[in-house]
Length: 296
Image 1 (cartoon, rainbow, N blue to C red):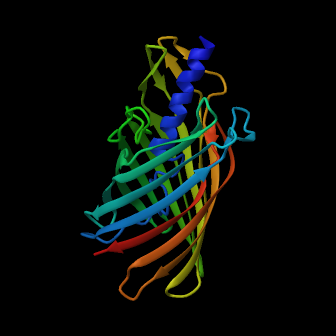
Image 2: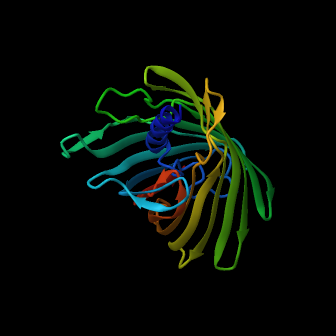
Image 3: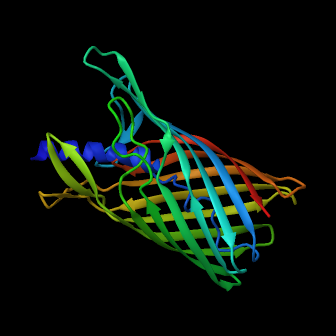
């Protein structure tokens, strides 16, 4: 039974990489408590590249993957939002996902498995109920629009499960910048995993997600941003065994320095770098992002 459950969790780990790229689902990325003016429509479009040849094991140790093996994902999320009032905003975050894995076959030859497809989609509503300092609530639902049952030789692009996230965001302006943070609880639904011709319901542990950051205004058009984000999860459940699997929780923390430039037209251009500090039962993904922001 332990071997079967280990296999089930290995499949679930692959799903977590393909479907969410760890913490980088951009639900919290660059998010502040302040909402936009009424009747504002806008978008933030991102391109992220992540790769890893190491992973964090169940004890939180950083270890190498098998020689010649690596994992990664390119993802293109687009955050589309609309403000009904100065304090109420709704949005949806669809994304394109391109996961890849390089594995050694029985002949020690490197075999590449990849995919290109739609990933899971977030929809959210944000309400700023206090303005000085700004404090807002955020309620989000993740829909399993990605493919969690890929063909042989392909990677999944989704997790096959619903998630619900409830969070509080706070802004604290200073003379030369802005401190901001967001923390939330994420309830995670179950997904089916087949191992040894038996179908199991795997329920990933619920998670606490957070993002803390400071933006320093270099000038009216240029700014430096330094974020740290991550999550802390609880152990998985596997049915029909109905076991809580010890040491199966996923945790991770990243630091994300960034530079942003606002053009005369109001278009925002940015670039950031992501580096893992610690984790458990996840790939040690690192990478960079490019993004553009526009609003009416």
